[in-house]
Figure 1 (cartoon, rainbow, N blue to C red):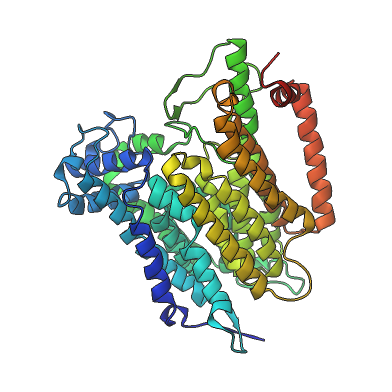
Figure 2 (cartoon, rainbow, N blue to C red; figure 1 turned 90 degrees about the horizontal axis):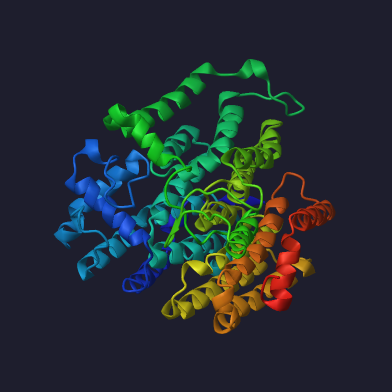
Length: 541
């Protein structure tokens, strides 16, 4: 028997927890930052110095404004504070501008806007079911969830070392999820619409939102067998949802209506810079091997510059087109969407399908950054504190997904920071969830434990052994290849575990069949021989 927690945010332990992680973030002010630091500084300059009509036309820097209009207005509002720190950072012509004032402002702006994330975490903790019997505070599901969200390793390194505003954005996502868990669907839809107009990467989640709201909000009744009662459809509810989405988009795109095509072209994933460091996606190993094949065969290569990869076509292996990735993504999430539609499903079933959509898009999508794995990790945190099986999936996905972010921080000074932060978060996750779900059985199966322990060998190999070996000069891409391939196994396994039917025997059979198919594909295109030659001889014949 459980009771819904109603005042998690007012508990005495929450403010110190939030304050502690905020102070930790402040320690990273002078740490390494990526090119995203210049990206956002340039956007501050564009929105502050130029009229609105030129925001999406300005291209003096390669880092053009390519986020939706609401984020542009967010940058515009920040720029009015930035001018009190260093007005020179708001000059469009000051490319690659860095100063102590600029660094301080941009770092602090991420810390303070994380207040939205803290509020979202508070609301999610309110939705957690607590046992009636009194537990030690540290063992309460709400406390564990608060730590898993506020102290998430991925958010800490991506936002406060690498540099971005993901915490601010994820705050809107958590608030939207909390409203749906509280059955306040219109508020949840409004918050998600705002989120989409802040950053369009969250379109990956839109199919889950669309099916859930249509099935559970617009249709008000079910048959006894759980199937939808078509006569219960409410046009007024559909109109209310449509009005919310339309209103938010109108407010966002209204000032840019004369140049809406230009704005949409900037938002397209088929244009613009793509990070060189791709995450553990299914097609990444093929991409990496292909680049090396081109180098060895002296065939025409893709147009590349430091840190950027533009769209290119394979000359040896078959090219992967956006249409192919779209079809693969839709096929990967279709069973979950059908399951959500097929019967009476509550908010937590919606949360699970949301997770599947995020992982499916991450694995098969086009132009997906490695940090997109956080779109699955954070919602899974809510499920992990309430369900034993989800806790096991969470441990596999977070450990694998977080390690896949290691290549983002490649400077020696940040190496001990990322290792220490990940160890702290991982150890806490294992111990807290194991205590929370105490009882017979283990959270992870022996093979899963063995796989996760293998990450230690991968880390030593990629972070220490290979950089110090002669292969660093001849095969500089090898550490990223090893990281991508190994982490892709864990992410794919997690994706299969989240499916509506997750019998472990069927999952293992499916994975073995998948591995066999991959083996056949590698053999057909000669890349298996390629990898064998790398491992045995350190070169290509």
